[in-house]
Amino acid sequence: MTSLTEKLSILTGKAFTTCNLPAEYGTVRISDRPDLAQFQCNGAMGAAKAAKKNPREIADNIVRHLKEYGIFSKIEIAGPGFINFDITDDYLTAHLSEIMQNSRLGIEKYAAGETVIVDYVGPNVAKAMHVGHLRPTIIGDCIKRILAFSGYNALGDVHIGDWGLQMGQVISAFAQRHPEWSYFNPNFQGEYPEQPPFNYSELEEIYPQASAACKADPSQLEKAQQATKEFQGGRAGYWALGQQFTTLSKAHIKQNMDSVGVKFEIWKGEADAASLIPVVEKDLREKNIFEESQGALVIPIAKNSDNKEMPPLMYYKSDGATTYGTTDLVTLYDRVESYGAALAKIVYVVDKRQNLHFEQVFRAARKAGYVQEAPELVHIGFGTLNGADGKPFKTREGGIMRFDQLVTMAKDKALQRLEEANLAGDLDDARKQDIAHKVGVAAIKFADLSNQPHVDYIFDMERMVNFEGKTGPYILYQAVRIQSLLRKAEEQNFKISGEAVITISDQDRPLALLLTEMPDAFDAALRHYMPHHLCDYAYRLAAGFSSFYGNCHILSESDEARKASRLALCALTCRQLALVLGWLGIDIPERM
Ligand code: ARG
Image 1 (cartoon, protein in one colour):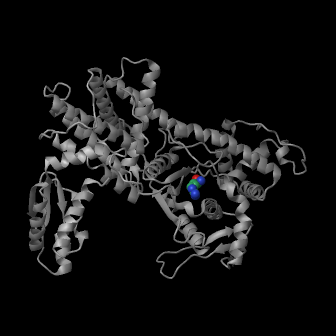
Image 2 (cartoon, helix red, strand yellow):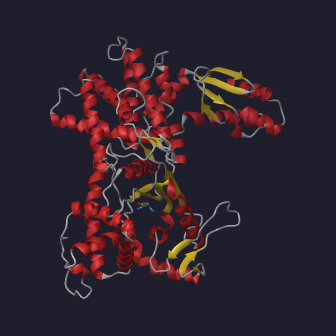
Image 3 (cartoon, protein in one colour):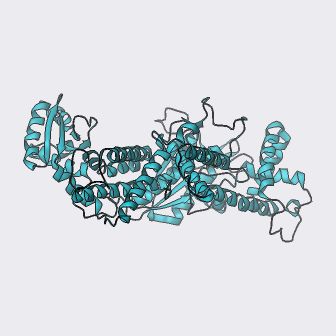
C-alpha cells in the first residue's frame, strides 16, 4: 500500500502538473516543525527557481488546487513559499484503517526475492571474539533483517578468517609445543586424529602468545609466515590441523552469536574459496590484468581521476603467499559464480579502517569483469566503539574485552536496574535472568544502532541500560506495558479488532499521526543502510505511546466506541513496535 507521505506527494504533484510544473516538486515530508503543521512541501521554491517565477505566487496557485481535494484541515504558506498543511481526521483515520488491515503494516516490497549476501563479523579462527566484533554483529544483522523484510532473499555470511597469518602463527606455535604430533611429520601417511588433541581454551590461549612472539622475535615471524605459506599450499598435516581450528572456532562463534540472537545462513570462511585461487589466476592472466611488481603479481587499479594513492591489489606476494585481497576477490568471484544473475547485492559490514581494502577489491572485481552492473557492491564501514577516554573500549584492567564478557556485563547491569525499578520482582530467578538478558542485549543493540554506522561512539553502559531516555530498555518497557494493557483488555473480554472505527480527539491525534510514519523511517533506513532512522522511530513511537497512555482513558474509558478506537491504536502501536524492534534484532520479553 502507498504510504501517507507518498499519497500526499502524489496529490501535491498533481497540483504542480496542473500548474504546468514538474510533479517532482510536489514531494511532501513530515513537517520539521510539528508545532506549525503536520506536513510540508518545499517544492515551490525549486519550481520557482527553475521556471524563473516568484515562489510565493507558485505556492499560492498550488494551495488553491490543494484546497479542492477537501482532505486538508489547514493549509498555510510560510516564509518564501513553504507550504505547510494538516490533513483532516477523516483522511487520517481512513489511512490508519488501511494500515491496520495490511499484513506488512503499510510497507511496500522493494524486491522480488533477489539474493543479497551480507558479509559481516568475519571473526578470525583461534581468536576469542571480542568487543571489536560487537558492531558488525549488530549492524550486519540489522541490515540483513531490513533487506529481508524489503523482499530480498538476504543471506548472512560469517566469512570466518581461516586463511591468513594467524593460521601459520598458531600452527607453528603448536609445532613448537608438540613436535611429536602427526600433523607436523611431513612423511606421515596415516589418518590424522578425528578429535583434536586440544580444546578451544588452549587454542584461544595459544593465539595471543604466538602473535606476541611474532611481534617480539623476527625468527618466530618467519616461522609463522613459512607455516602460513605451507598451509595455504595445502600441506596435508597443516591443512588437517587448520580444519580443527576452524571447527572449534565455529562452535565458539556460534555460541557468542546465539547469545545475542544472531544467525547466519552461510558458515563459510576465507579458505572455502581457496581452491578457486588458481582458477581466478588463470582467468586474470588470460585477460591480461596482472602486472609483475618486484616479484609479486598485482592488479593495478589506480585511475587518473584518483586524488589519493591507490595501491594495486596484491594477488601473490613475492614469496608466493596470497593476501587478504586475494581471498576477498576470489570469494567475490565464487559468490557471483554460485548465485549468478539472482545476486543483486553484496553488502560488507566491516570496520571503516578497511575502506581502502574494499575499494581495491571492488575495483579489481570490476576490472576483471566479475561485476558489471550487478551485483551492487556496498561497504558499510563502521566506526570504533570507544571507552570514556575516547580510546577503543577495554576492560577496567586495560585488557581486551571479550564478547561474552560484555554481554554478561550488560545482563548484570540490567538485572541491577530491574531490581532498582522494582520490576520483575515477583518472577522466579530463571525468568528474571532471561528478562535481564533480553534487556541487556536490547540496551547494547539499541545504543549501537542509534549511532550512524560510520561514527565512533562512546560505549556507556550506565547510560544505555536505563529505563528512562532514548534507550533500548525504555522502549522495551513501553512495549511490555502495551502488551499487558492488551492482555487486560482481553481478560475483560474486549475484542480488539483491526476493523475498529478510529475516532480522533486531540489526545489521540499525535499517536495516530505517528503510526503513519513507519514506512518513511523504513525507507530511510533501507536506502542508506542507516538503522538509526528505525531507532529514532521506535523511540518516538514508544514516547508517543507513553504520553497517550498518560493523557487518555483507555481501559477506563466509558464511551465504548472511543475505548475500541483507543485499544485499536494501542494494538497497532504494539504491532509496529514489535516489527521495528524485530528489525533491530531486539526481543521483547513477555513481561517485566
Ligand atoms: N577477518 C577480517 C578481520 O578480522 C574481517 C573480515 C571481513 N569480511 C571480509 N569479507 N573481508 O579484519
